[in-house]
Length: 162
Image (tube, rainbow, N blue to C red; front, top):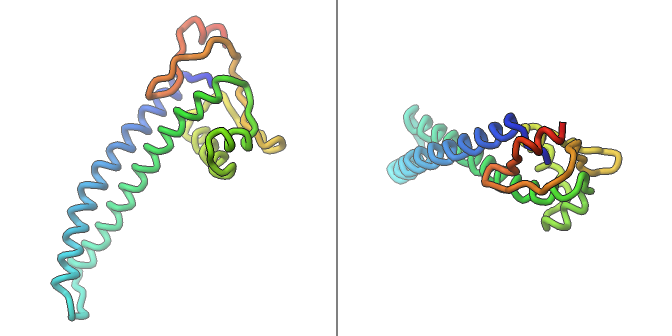
């Protein structure tokens, strides 16, 4: 798939945000998780919950959710690399074909592709619901280099595709 500067930046931004969410959510989730466990052990046998304890539980859940969101972002980024390797070989793939190749359920593959398109990872692609396939509008030529941010193209290749 053709990767413009805009989609490369979207991929980099997603990766950085995912790492930050995992770091911040993991650290503070761990701290508030330990505090919540301490509160549970100290309140053993009593029914009363004061405001501070409830706030600790709420913060634990918020930071745990932040961590999970970071993991999902990073996982999508890693899946993008696998998808882009396949999608650079042909202008279209059936979602069922991709599911077999990637060893994942077709609904998961379709969901991942929709999220990648929504997040602007795959700017030159769309999902054709009639044929249940992903179609690229990119002009095909030389297979690009795959880096941790996806496909990288030279200036001449970008100019050829326009």
